[in-house]
Amino acid sequence: MSQNDILFERAQRSIPGGVNSPVRAFKSVGGTPRFFTRGQGPYVWDADGQRYVDYIGSWGPMILGHAHPQVVEAVQRAAHKSLSFGAPTEAEIEIAEEVLKLVPSIKKVRFVSSGTEATMSAIRLARGATGRSKIIKFDGCYHGHADSLLVKAGSGLLTFGHPTSAGVPAEFAAHTVVLSYNDMTQLEQCFSELGKEVSCVIVEPIAGNMNLVRAQPQWLRRMRELCTQHGAILVFDEVMSGFRVALGGAQSLYGIQPDLTTLGKVIGGGLPVAAFGGREDIMHYLAPLGPVYQAGTLSGNPVAVAAGLTTLKLIQASGFFECLTEQTQKLCNGLTQLAQHHGITLTADSVGGMFGLYFADQIPRQLSDVSGSDIAYFNRFFHAMLARGVYLAPSAYEAGFVSIQHDNSLIEETLASAQGAFKALG
Image 1 (cartoon, rainbow, N blue to C red):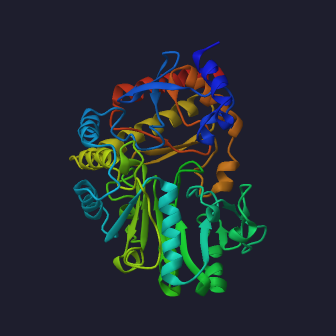
Image 2 (image 1 turned 90 degrees about the vertical axis):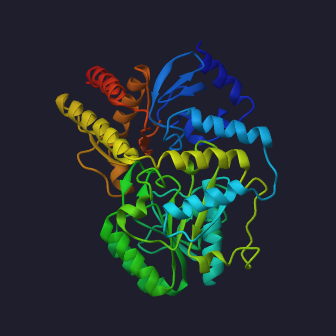
Image 3 (image 1 turned 180 degrees about the horizontal axis):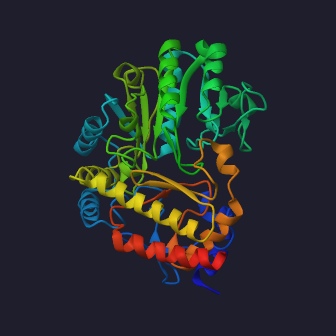
């Protein structure tokens, strides 16, 4: 029995499902999850000492690779001073100023410890600022595990959603309208019927939790127009895409300014940091200035902020995102060419350092397209790649991530593994 098997059996005796976040359990793909002991650059090592090329990168934060020496040094310096104060520090100001510089739509920002906190707080703020209760979200977009966001589409075009998790009261879900991603007709009809009741629309402009799916530019532009017209607040959830697809996030690629933005992952450099921010008039509804309450004992934690601030400074190096984008495209192009050579239907897409692989004949536009892909083949491909030392996301519904450490030789190594996997799977 491998050390991974032993650890998984042990973990299940004290932790529900043996994991502290569900996708880690490998339930989508089957098999035993890998328990990692260390990471360096683009590699991770499991409890059996097996090395993998890592295309998860802690689900996005490790854009510089694992254990980047400058990030580690910054964390060590901060830790020597104290792990936490529960009081203001100058570093909080510095990272706030950096975010405002890089994301022009954000005029004021509040730091929290997780993406779920950021989106939950942004929605509370939108409701407090507008005095309205209803929110619009889109099927396939994941915004954390707050009650009003664990909602799936209702049975009709404009029926309100219903809970996707036990423990979420139906009356919470009743305030959430769930529409199809990239569906202009539904969006316009919804605002026509409910526009004056909507506090906010929350959307991933580049989704990563139904695999990588891009918003259509005209759909986002119309969303911006409708929110302005009806007095609703537009929230871009860039917890995943922020500083990942471009230095200014997805909003800089689309040229659309949301009213509020949520950030996470890269902003913490691998430690628990997230944020929400936007228009000054909206942010001033937050306590202690306004009536919308939000707080967090470890918000702005000095050690986490040190990792995040160092990461944000390093990714501003000249040519950083051009290189990241090029390497990610090389990976996607190489995989699709190999699949075609072996007679396997595979499409791929990438933006910046995010990518998606779909065993389907076209790139998806919404969740139903991803669900219609060959999920069973993906599961087999995942295990074939894992056996060859390549660690992909253990679900056909998750995007992948490339770090700046994934150089040409590593892409070639990955493609060689894929060649073997496709040949073995047939």
